Length: 115
Image (tube, helix red, strand yellow):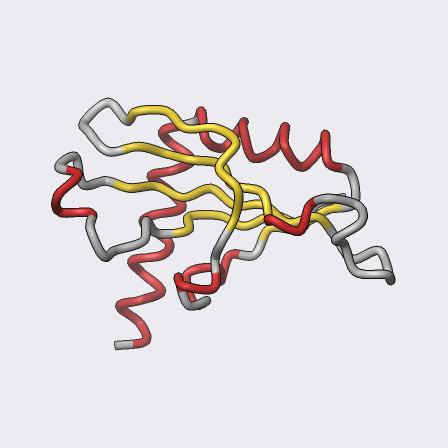
């Protein structure tokens, strides 16, 4: 079973490194991307069999020059033991513009409460 971390926005964006496996353009510009942790390889995974992790990032800036020096926000991070199930859930979210918008609104609301 997958667990979704709603608090992914609290992580430092620099720590969110992954291998991009899917990217699509957003209707108003920018892109959404699915990443899997670079340690996904079975030999690189922790000896205890830790979960496979992946995330959906969404860059809303359409101008690539404005993106320089900034990582796209992580709108969802998932973890699970089944790679196929994890990828299916990540792709499903990356294809759903309404779900992406809801996750962004939650992130902004959480950020406003902490400031």
